[in-house]
Image: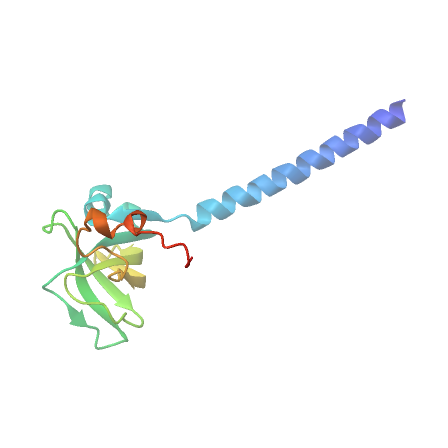
Length: 154
C-alpha cells in the first residue's frame, strides 16, 4: 500500500513541477515581449520614464522632417491624430518605407532616449491606403442580392 501511495505522490509532484515550469515560461515570455501600443497623447500622459519600450501611433508632422545624414534613416515629428499640438520627436534608423511622407499615419516601435527625449525607433511602418476601402456609397441596385438570377451561370 505505501509503495502505491509513494508512486502516486511522485507522479503528482512531477506533474506539479512540469505544470509550474511551463506556466513560468509562458508568463516570462509574455512579459518580456509585451509592448505598449499608444497614441502620442497617451504616451505623453504616461511620461518619458515609462516609454523604454513602446509602439506609438500617429501622423508624420508637416514640419521638422529631415533625412538623417549620418545613417540610413529619418528624423521627424510624430503628431497625435486628434490633437496635432501633441508631438514626440522620433529618430528612425533603417530603410524608409515608400509611402512615408508628411500627413501619413505611421506606427513606430522603440524606446525613448532619456537624455535627448527623442523616441529612438527600431521599426517604422506606414499605413497604406487600402484598395478595398469604399470610395463612395452604393445604391441599393448595386447590391449582389439585387442582381437577377438567370439560372445558367453560377
